[in-house]
Amino acid sequence: MSDAPSSSLSRREREQKRRRQAMLDAARAVFADKGYADATLNEIAGRAEFGKGTLYNYFEGGKEELFLAVFDEATRELEALIQTVFHASADDRPLRSTVHEFVEHYFETVRNQQDLFLVLVKEIHAIAFSEKAERTRFFEKQQERVLGTLVPVLREAMDQEDIRCLPPALVANVLFTSLRSMGTHHILERQRASPDASDGAMRPLENPDQAADVLTALLFDGLALPSSSPSLPDTDSDE
Image 1 (cartoon, one colour):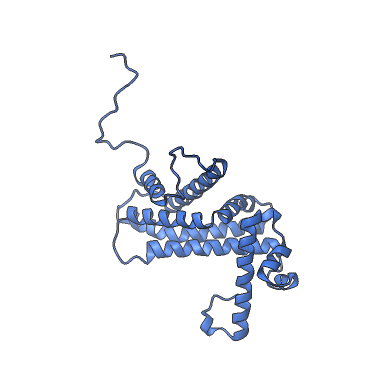
Image 2 (cartoon, rainbow, N blue to C red):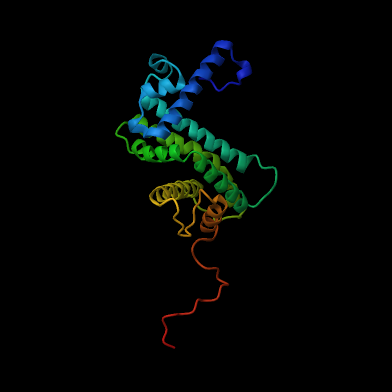
């Protein structure tokens, strides 16, 4: 379906677009509730209030094509977030501040859609290492799209000597891999914990600002103490 503005579409095209989006919304909800393996086309069709045959008219590949379309939609949303935070900002903030804001927004999004997030993360690996070449190419293109929106920002910061000169695609990949890992770890830990558990651990989805502080510090400062920091006392010394 074309991404042309609704005003330029015919009435029939607008209706087709509306139907397709209703099917995608239903698929997102069912995948989030049931996971990919247990989701059925009958349930997706029922939730979208269309017949199963109508679903196949829009997604001939059935459940797999629907899931890939949901994956594509999530990628578009991530691209839009990157564009908004990194490219649409009118001020000249340091890159560190912009990354901090992006991480906050990312975790807020994950918090609001955490069931779907877990399904997507789980299936990412199945798609990336699929024996079907077309599925692997699909995943690679999704990755390229996301990284491609951030690489120019990183390259410009490197050219201006705001950050170290490293392969920008690798730096972008480290950022997104860290985000997925932190989000997944927290969701799984919270699911295993008792409702009244309070261990004082960082909870990035409850406190995106704190998560942004930690990840930004790791990216920009690393784990080493600043060179100006005094050495820590040797508590095991007998002297």
